[in-house]
Image 1 (cartoon, rainbow, N blue to C red):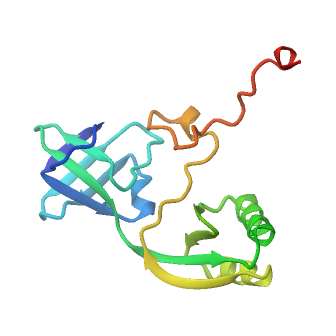
Image 2 (cartoon, rainbow, N blue to C red):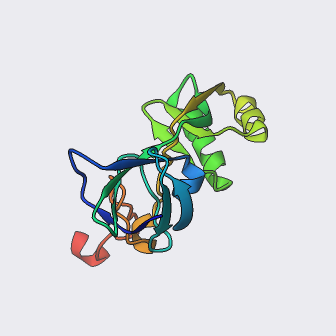
Length: 164
């Protein structure tokens, strides 16, 4: 079994690939099978989430590319931005992992949440696609993983007195 305990920088070439749904990419301890069929033991820092395109370094020096496995998702769209923001608020209020796109939201397939967002006026399409939800506003503060593209920090506003 190949053992992985750390990440590495992205590479042009890799030795194998680890394809997992979002639920399993959240686990820091995992036994999985690579695309080659070889077993892998994952032992990362707690709280790290693997993202599509991340790279792992095996103890034997091999580079493993992480890929998001397509899974059952709901794509949510609305006729206007205000309605979509309202739906995002209600999903966030329920701590639902949400992937945000240009004019759409994506959540894991769930019939109760589907009824809720349709009741709020959304159109919903069930499909199978990779699921890459937002890391969360404070993810960078609670993990050693790379911060989200938006920095992941919303609570550092600076000294109020220096703004006047």
